Image (cartoon, rainbow, N blue to C red; front, top):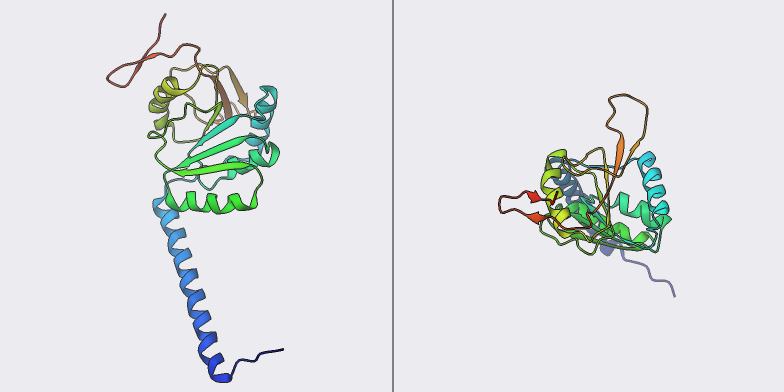
Length: 208
């Protein structure tokens, strides 16, 4: 049986759908502008860096590890890893509601175990991590170094892209091009076997 809408009903129905669609598009535009203008810089990891990070994961047998992406934005890095290593468990942390919401929505269309939290990276405990990825402003690294030294389990791996810690010596540096002054480097760190003492004024004390 086929039902037909009366012209009077169509006259009301079609404009209503158009209005609802316009409202939805307007809300999406507002959210995008908010994210673009107030959400902070978008730190996007390029494919050439992802290729090297995938090699680090394979070389260190981290295919089934727990990885934390600090500053996960819309989940690009997490999804790229899980597409290659679906047995990994990933936790993305970002302080933007819009970007975290987008990442959560995208997770429905990707394989793997991904969880995205709208949190400040300094307020969440990361002691469960086997691997931590960081591509953030350089000015955050000093505070992050203290946090990682305090919370990470001994032997956990930390990978940074384009930024490096001041006091933490990397186990490996991978240059992504040959330019002499390039910032296109990946830094691999191992969490210390002994946890340093955290000083009251925010630094760390290591035994000589």
